[in-house]
Length: 250
Image (cartoon, rainbow, N blue to C red; front, side, top):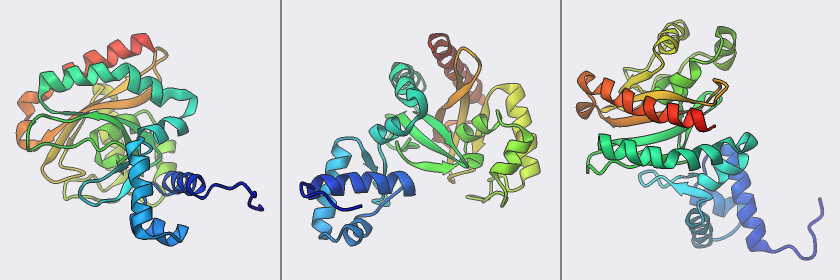
């Protein structure tokens, strides 16, 4: 396609970056500078601007940029994500205040979950719900509670190459995962004990609409020492209360 005479380079570059991060899931300053043929400082300012406007979010540790809240909203079908984030915001704040732990809202996207919103724990040592970040679904509580809604055939088709282990605790076998998902389906909640990250545990419930369709997962995540078995049931009840309230309104 021929470039129009009135092309604005800065706007074109910004839109190109949003296309890149949507397709790839993440981008880095150096790669953006190389592909757009701009200086690293210009690439950094471009990414910083998109982050300021919530189209991107930067991982503070790796410095990688991922889709931000506004990009996630725009690519979601039927506006489900935008609606969920708006309706669940006050519930997540309340769960965070009562549990004093981090809370996340995640969406199943193929083999991964993507964090679409979250509330940080007030503790210095905490699990961080990184909005825009992705994790393998089978290694997370939020992912497993959504995978539990799939049929066995859908599960097999989703993982043609088997499962990747992130830690020593990650489920590695598809047959084992299937058995665990059956239990999760019966119980209505999922637990992750250091399956995606060493030292981090989580408990999650599905967020469903009035017709029973699972839309997302609502999760409490914390350092494992602060989420022992004795704290699981109170956490589950907190999550279920909010999920049910949201279900009535959707």
